[in-house]
Image (tube, rainbow, N blue to C red; front, side, top):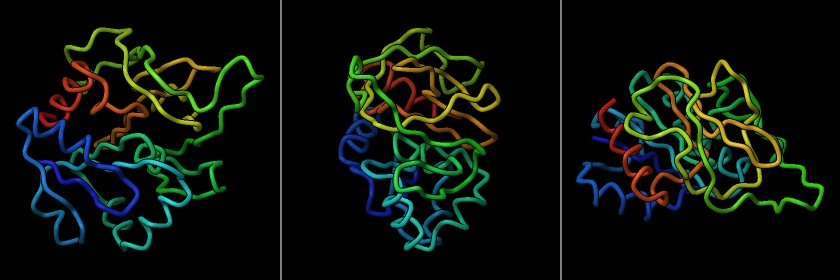
Length: 196
């Protein structure tokens, strides 16, 4: 069963609707004691990374999250929170990945935020992308991206520059796109995560 970590910075309706469509059991993590009920976790997130980190710190759950040893998936800003630092709000984050979240710089030929469908290319073998062909399209909405680092990049995408569409280190995973809004392959990814 998946525990969705609640900290006031995630719009979780589309995520819970997708999990319900897929028949994946889930519940909410509001306190440290709640973690024991679940065998994997999702950290959702929308909006401002610095503000999201501040809200997460206010819950008192940060030490517990950093010590998790079960599969944990950050989505969008939830993924950015896994990195060391974000230029958005000049914020120090969870530092579970020693990489940074940077702001897109556009010369006017690209719009920021990066909004819409883009192709994702896996760079490592991992069950998270099982039965998802290379070049499949996923839905993105973001103005900040995670710097590309071959060590941690699970899949990549290009918009203005190449960046990590997903990251992986141990039991921690992150996806910059919204699987819950990405059609069949997004649902495949959520199903894969529920089976990791």
